[in-house]
Length: 327
Image (tube, rainbow, N blue to C red; front, side):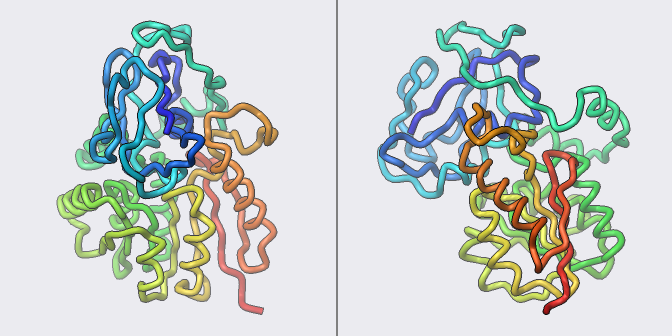
């Protein structure tokens, strides 16, 4: 496995694109060693540091200055399934985006793309209301500890849907429960069944949901969603998918028989910083396999005879689909 250090300046990286950067920082080696999920990042020196190498049985020898971390044993999971390395990176300073400081390594990553113009992003960000203390704490934790959570706008979209539908929700990918809180707060008779394979994250989510007074409206199912999904009992009225990008199609396939007749589906990260629109041979920050999966899923949803779908420029791109009547 290659763990490339990315010595970019803090003002040289838009954090909305950090998830894509993470996929380029950690890549499989030529022997195709699998990389376990839940690899996080924290400050190592003036550049990027990987937290969780020890938990993944990685050798951290000279990671601050070298380009390679070598696995001591096979790792579980797939490089596309990085649950803990998506959302935030702690970077050293260099306003010119090519600091060679302690690493002596200049980043070869392409410039970050934007789905919306910066002025529009700023306007929408300024429109956000004051968050509760709990929501603000979760956002700060996610930024500090590199935990993947949805954009606030995506959370609000889910909250609106839950307010209108009061559904039974199936959420694939809990993390610390940020999106879960958005949804559960708006439910009356509905509830959320959320799937999370990281036991530490599941425990954090439980704590937040209890503190938010919504624990009675949710259930956390621990384990790999590919293994736990088949055993769930439906029907579910709303499916929200935000987990391993390369497995999106499989999650939907497993969940579809458990959805109600008029179910809605929401899928996050379908525009991937806008890079899905680039030519397939373009240099990107997102992992090429993840981009290929997103492009394929976007096309499949729009052309589907089973789903009436659209892809919206909300957050990092959100697919919204309603189940069509059975033929």
